[in-house]
Image 1 (tube, helix red, strand yellow):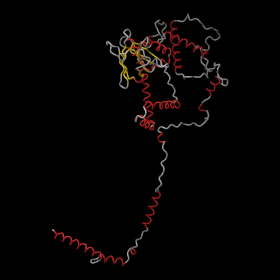
Image 2: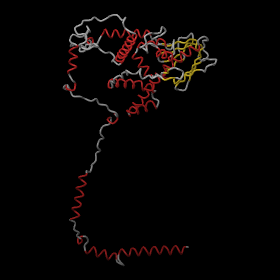
Image 3: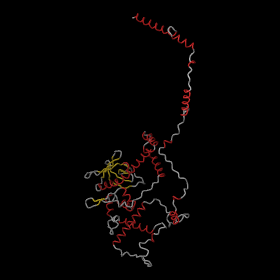
Image 4: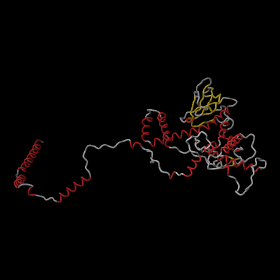
Length: 454
């Protein structure tokens, strides 16, 4: 069954799988089905392994939900509760519509990260082919350690700043008419995330009502129709689920005002919306009654409060996590050796980093893109002689010098007696010529013998 750490989002009873009754569980990272009377799951699929979901058409006798996996396999669930079969199927479908895109995006990011690592590291790519392609180990075992090491390296080297929220993200939501005296809002995942980060109370209401009480479309329709979105309205509806959100935001805004600004160099309480000579010499106490305020003033104050709260929430959403209270001048638990806040602010305002001396030399971390280039040492020289270009030039000059000074000495080539004996041997009747004549006579004798035999 589900472990104690798993969060169960939805439980649907009387769900059949292969004509067997059981219970369907939708958890944070997977969907599972277990038969009745047993304490284990016979069907369990991770959301990352599911490609899509299909439902049976309206009017069909069986109300079914089919899950198609990336491997091509499919699992079908039959909702058999006669009173709430359609409602149970729609609740499961709505929840899967929210969960599947999140895990699909996560799977795509992991695949892109794996491709990037294989392209940048040829040694890792060769290791992948030797181990995974040859089926020595599985791909899951290969990437189990590599991805954790890579994530650790990225967390140490790349400390990227978190992207903040645009202050005009609500103004960018421009409604379109649907042709039936209605408005249509196109919400993207980024806009919904910005709303949740800016207004945590809306995220809380979303978790409380979707998909148990309202569908996602109905929730956002009520949000854009609510007083919480149109805060310039004076009267609020009794059926507005966001009325509590406005009250919580009002309390949060009052606490921000009471807390004030922690910068001792800025005194916002001394700022007034009047000139210096206005009311000079007259001491008037501020009025505490709101009876003289008109409806227009109340509307204007509501708009001003809305802008102030929106700006405060945008700044709070973009603030860094785990911010310390070192700049808090009213903190009683501050260190004894810590300088006062006012002194720190003065020091920040008069000192510039560009004009300070460098404490030490700046170093750059070594980042090798292709480490295989540095994995081999120099090639050793073979034990043989090598001719340099200077040796060739010296040899050519030496030969050229010898050819320029060459003088033939023909009288010393052959003596007179040797020359006369050679001429006598080559003349007719000589030693060499007699041997040639004898060879010719022998050849003719052989020819006459062959003719007589024939």
